[in-house]
Length: 450
Image (tube, rainbow, N blue to C red):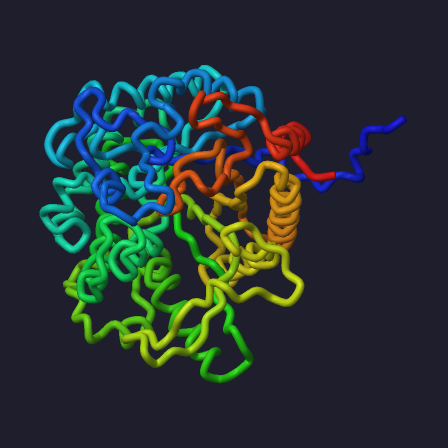
């Protein structure tokens, strides 16, 4: 007969550690034109032939807009203490500017109330990639005015929900949506524009600062942060050329967004590399960006392997997405199972950035087939063990959000990749707990790992 593990055999997390799951608006909500919602850049991008692997879109997704009560009940059954979701800017503020639409913001108000009734803490992300198309038509992130537009939007949403929602995230992964949206064209708005990328990268940081200022004013007694993805950047080989390429890539990809927020300055190497773009950094900009924040969200999946490539302008570096460490297991995206990478990131933040309070706001893996869900269990277990080691080392890790609560629209991959711990049949919309959901519920309930 099996016996429950003793308390001493558990790897326990701190008593107040927060366990949650994460989603984003475009990936799960559906209802693309309901109650006055206007188009986002992803609605436009999905209509462009060949952009989405399976030709799909988020038009229906998980129908969370109408099924949110059932989804909150599902979260409660898993014992979650927190839920990270994002606001659809074009749903609550059609056109991206002006007054909030009562119908759009009412959806999120009802969602917040439902979460609180279930004993689940809302973590609200203001921007998870679905920019109003009308603002993109005015230059989007390349237009400096977007910092003000975003601040006004943040203030309006904070004013509407801040009496109940007390945890706010300004932006999700700015380095990802700027890099893939303006340099490679793989994501909306689908541009390949080095000068546009340079402007956008700075204006994104400005917008973060504007949003923090607005939330401090309109959502008082809240905790405010932002979410970055700062993967460890490793050289593909031991050559000096690849090592230098990795340093260049890390400076532009990671620290360009990390340093101004936490240190109030841009990294010198990145400024040198991006100098030809003549990024319009004005007096006072860094002060505007460097607003005090209460926590840093970190999305983490794996590491990057970088090699020198002199044909690449400015960076002279390229990421090798097909390279794996010898013997490494990897998911269907090709991302190595490398839990030490999470420990590296948390250690870097502790030793180089004054040890901020951190939430892991996304962590998970992509699989095609359901029979591989045991891989997801192994993945989550390994990364949580690495997180616990970082806590033992002194990192101020306050919580963990699995990505994702349920299978959803996975951007340029459409519905060909499944990140959820809950299976979604996209035809019937039936939700089914996977093995990983059972495992995660048990982990949450005992606040630790066997």
